[in-house]
Image (cartoon, rainbow, N blue to C red):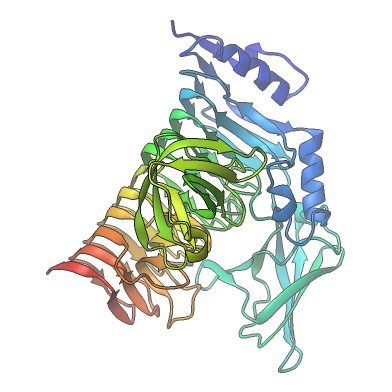
Length: 542
């Protein structure tokens, strides 16, 4: 029997203790609705404050991700859905203000759960904001950009503070984020609140411009989804996070409707890395009616993982997931009995067959697993260099009616099979708006198939690269040490897209596709309309 409970009925010393009691009660009866009354709620723990202070002050080094983004790193959780069935949390008009670095919402090991209306932001945001007070060429070989931090951004800053991870300034002329206009740019905190960047060949005086300085890359997401089934986020907003906005891993059937990863009021950046990343998921992944603005990465990235073959011993194979940062939830990606693993050459990502998993054992605390296949891999698989990837852990992606602007990387990165990217608007995306690929270096795959890109609009995108190399609309290809000898991406339709991205080298670049349909696409400003290489079975309509 469904029931409704109210957050105001639960007492406690702080918001987190009250949330714990409320979520415990909601989890007792499947189908319970928890209503959180409108208002601002501080959520924090001593650990969350310590992690933030250590990160920003430089205690975790120049790139804190190497310390913070590890399976053994201790962190705090906020609202926790673990074990829930049918729970619905209604948080219209509710803002969680996070004091410190933590995982504000944890949706794991649950099914049929819904979160509506919540907004997440930070008291001391995970980036610093300042203004350029001097922008000077000292000689042909040396230039300075001096940034004076403003407001709360001065807190926790020391000479060891990470200030070289990602630095952008907001250009009032173009009304968009731009990279610093000098070569070899390196910064250091030289005094209280003053960051000096040194480089050469300053191409533009940017005195008075607002600057954003990241202090971390990946950490815990604002909203974790893991080992869940039938998860819905509706009208949820994330203004900032020292990591990603949403990370979904090993989930089945996710609906994201009306999500917003957008800057807080008066600011120009939102999450430190991707707004949303979905890995090793299955079923339907639907992202609709959502807004993604100014993330330090992509808007949405969907992929599985490549595992390198280390040992072949008869029908027993030792493999290791090789992604540079581990998985994006720090939980190892292991196949299950019955899963189909696609086998490819690690040098080119060229597919050489599939195998079915008949037995698997894992090595706890590592990204290594030992697998039996129905047909053993060649004894020289290690010498040749082979990857295996679980093609049962690839969701059907629907990305429709969304708005993306100012994303640092691509907007949509599609490395799955059976996807529709339709009816979206992309503006001022710094990289390529739509990137359909497999990537050997990031060990993110697989080669996509059955992809439709239709009726999208791209304006002023691709400007982070030089004009000769920027891609203003759509890129399809394989990122590997060697290009595959035969096309690896299958069945791609690119129809009725409108691209207006001035000074980019090409509007649409397509490589390594077997089964390509093109039609009704309009380029109004890129130097070239289209590049097509190593593609078979091409159909061009109008």
